[in-house]
Image: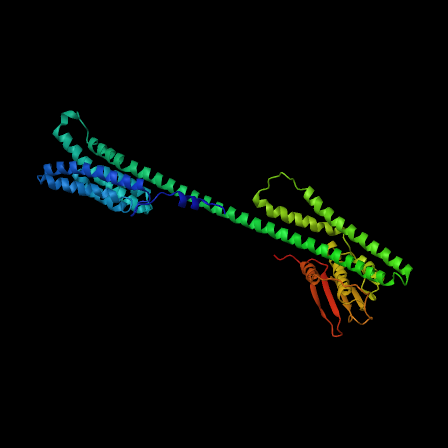
Length: 448
């Protein structure tokens, strides 16, 4: 299983503190800032109480309570900024105001609210700075020389802007950077998930390609071995029956058995040669990416399927019928329409259907009469193999007890359906069996 960034975050995240802090260090930072702000406001509250004639403990307590509000800056940054603006006229809470403005700008609060509170804080600082500087100029004019009327407003504006805008701009930068990092992290997690999904699909396609190739090879092996060996068994049984009575016929049957065996070996060698060639073309030490496994397997299956171009064709059906006749089967072969060239897969599938149907007759209805029909139509080719009842011809060769694996009809149906054709099989009213298949010779139009 592929480990995504979300899993790593879940595994690597430290224990969280109850409340609105994500990490312990965030809680420690906020508590530390709140303590520093409380101490600052306590001193400033004591000074304000002394200047206003209020009790000193009351000013200290007010300063501690006001400064401690900074501990909730992550949860309620608007409240922190509002408290800072409220106590600005008392010349208190400078640290709280700066940190509150930074937190407000870095949070997800709408920008219009941030702009409004920043403007309010700017005005409050300007007023405080203006009043204080005007009083200093009035109390000690000799320290300032001969300032003009612009001096106090300009310096007050400079102080207000210098204290308000830097934390806001820095907060906006940090907030944008945080959102960018979260977006990049989400994209990375999404990409990892997509790559994991693609890898899983590639594995599924590779497994499907391997399964299809194993099925195709098994089908080819079944068609070759079942038909050739079935004829060999039939001829061997006939050879055993006539060996002493009719030596010339026994010699003929023995020659036919040898021919069948050589043909079977030739077809098996061709199939094994294709498989070995496919293995030889694959680098033994190559490292193939997982995403390319499905494509490579599908290409191998297609290449193996393409090797069927040298296989049997419809023209070989007549020879197939002749072999069954040599084995003692009564076969009538009818061709309708004008023969023409078809795609290699259509030619081979038509041949294999007739071959497997004749093999089934040898196995299950020895001695029955067989009718093989082949029809060439405008956009399709049809074939039908029908046999009578097993005892219609008086029985088959003695001793020809042929086993059956039950895969012949399944293989024929898979072949025909794979080309978009129609396959029907079943018993007849006369007690025989009929196999019919129709293969399209024109590819269907592409959709879209």
